[in-house]
Image: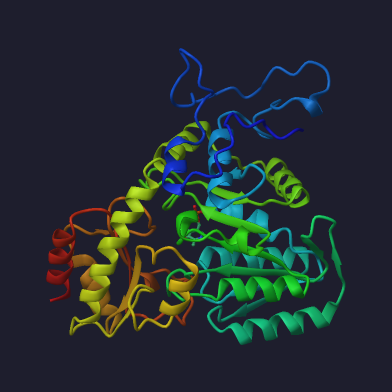
Length: 401
Ligand SMILES: *Cc1c(COP(=O)(O)O)cnc(C)c1O
């Protein structure tokens, strides 16, 4: 199967906030649609050699996905089209399946809990080691890489510079969900690549507008498109990006063979949502910065984690490696009961899981039985939306009181 041809001219020189608006459009000819149509075909005309047909059957590739896959590749600086998946977790599972039997997956102990649970299961079935680390502790992660690498020691290098490893994979999530720990992303990628590990980065919280890990040498970037990229809490989708033809082929096979693919309408909605990513994120970050500062000064709040706060443990790193601090805040009150009461008392904020939509969400994370016990009982995660700041603060302040 050949890779679908891009309908876009080269525009690598454009800024990301322009790219989100103008990428993934149909070819400019008189009478053409301004937006890509929703292509519902399950099969495509392919006389003769099916391998050379850009589209043949919609479980493999479809024009319903291509504009969005091209848009994500441009944003994440991938040289190959992205791969859309039916959910963020499907994208994560596909990426984790790249870990070779006998190798090691090193993953943050405060990764998205679904990623941790999925990784542990895949590790057992596929026969690789599963090691959790404090991703903010660079020395500890490097020590884990060293001990995993020395246990196996077989590393080879592919011709294109990406590593094909018997050693394993370093999984990076930064900032983490929900603890907001910031990893030293450039240092960790460099250390892992030196030791022959593949590197995958869950870039859901940051979005490609705030960091582009492929530029730093990561092999794979994954997204829960459900969150900021789609941005309206109306689709569940995921994506994987890579510039390695070999890895893309493996991930593509994984998608085609597992078969839990994305629907055309969901992908169309995601591209529609992506158009406003830059303005949504801009507004949400401005709101988040102000709310984090006010929370940090509030007597009912024990701790506020937001990388935009000057005294946050992740502030220096985030300032150095990100173009902004995102719009997720974690704060703790002293008991689970107080946290639950706050989430029940709000009227404008929506008590719901998930994040990254235009509407502000609030959640006590430990209400999920699967959340790691190292996440404090009184921790509340805020996904700050794009409403008026003073309305958001008035509602939250009343609930805190
Ligand atoms: C939500 C989320 C996921 C899972 O994505 P789904 O689209 O819900 O499957 C993975 N990683 C992070 C950081 C998330 O926030």
